Length: 157
Image (cartoon, rainbow, N blue to C red; front, side):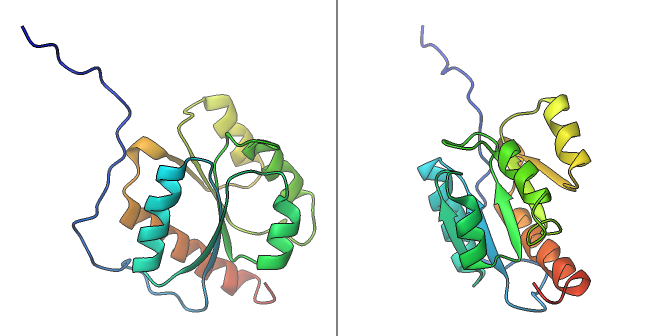
């Protein structure tokens, strides 16, 4: 008798659809990604390149402040489990820094912990995505939308 493979967390890949995001940027979108998983880095890169969106990826949170200051993102995609500083620590530090206090942050994690989600909401995060349940076309659209909202609310960024 053949054994069934054990269930794993699946990432919904929508690589067949080659259409760009359904929301057009109203300005230059610059996404700063903090993600340590090489596979997800690659998938995010492919989807953002296909949508002609500028991005930079860091595998750790160690130098997050200098990366943000140098790159000047319009939106941040933040994993919660990183080497160095974790995503929650980065989020707290960003919210206490005048230069990044209002920067839109999308949490991108596999942690469904309600306490962590509540902490991120208390720190002004509107979007808390579970990686295994995320459609990457929808993620790109969300990043453009949040970046557009940032540009309208804070045009100096």
